[in-house]
Amino acid sequence: MSDEVRLTPDLLIRAYASGVFPMGDDCTGRLTWYAPDPRAHLPFEAFHVPHNLRRRVRRREFSVTSDEAFEAVIQGCADRDRTWITPRIIRAYTALHKRGPAHSVECWQDGELAGGLYGVALGGAFFGESMFFRESHASKVALVHLVRQLRAGGFVLLDTQYSTDHLERFGVTEIPRAEYEARLADALALSPDWWPLTDAEAAALDTPPRAFHRTPAAPRNENDRKG
View 1 (tube, rainbow, N blue to C red):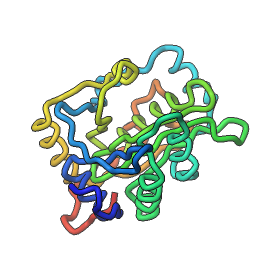
View 2 (cartoon, helix red, strand yellow):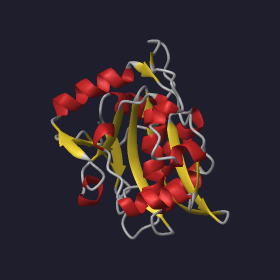
View 3 (cartoon, one colour):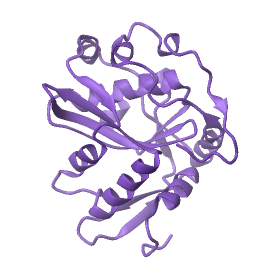
View 4 (cartoon, rainbow, N blue to C red):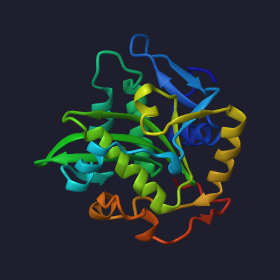
């Protein structure tokens, strides 16, 4: 796909539905499109929360919300020495957030944004883009809440794009691109709920998330393009 193509919400939706995503170059401003093979994802049944992190989540050391500070979260993710989250990426995903499919997860402490993550939801798939923290463990807590909320809402695929040693500690693994595309197709056929649990329910790690929210993910209407 040409770098000259205008990065619009509609283009991003089509790209993600095809298993493709963009990354920017903060030196040149150019945009490159990727479809990794193998592709990394986090199987919900394999999700592992270390003991110390479980304790922090249960104690609710952070207040966790969704979509309350998307622009602050994406700016926080971009705030590093080298980043693929260029101004062009920020503008495009902020516009996608206003359309609905792009979401943020925020961790707050004493009224201040302590960390979070953002990504894109299409059908029953969530595509994780980036995370950041200003207070230790904030991004990890955001991830735990995200997984709990996705499971409760009926999502079936959490795409992390690439695997790292850090993500593998939580259960991230790689699968061949063909297998990923088959799982993506199944996920896109669903219409799950976004963020159905309260903060307290999401933090109650000893209770299965679907015990709080039992509405099954329904097949989506072919004409429905909402994330």
